[in-house]
Length: 153
Picture (cartoon, rainbow, N blue to C red):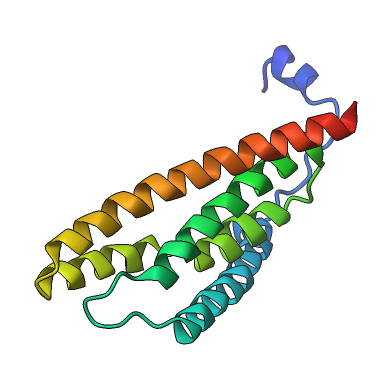
């Protein structure tokens, strides 16, 4: 026998829950597709702008800076301006921009520069990328917030 309180809590019949994989499968799919698109764009940029041995990795540097700026604008748009579809953030934010920006390549580039006897360039690259990426996301989000709040008035 069940307690009377428990019976009164059930005012409607319980629906069977969807299996976890059925709710996560679309998210995983859009992250995968977005990641493939972002990584392809990043790879294309490195083919167009290759880094000479011992040289400053400009393609990776600008990929990360531009990607961070886009992340700043995107986050303002989906949090302050739009009512975004639930799959937009995983597709574009995590997938496309996650595949496009490449902080793992940044770390490998630093290691290659140091191992090749260019520690000053490696240190300059380490500091410049970090500073430029953080500045880009901050400036882009501030500019987007300013631009979109002005439009709303």
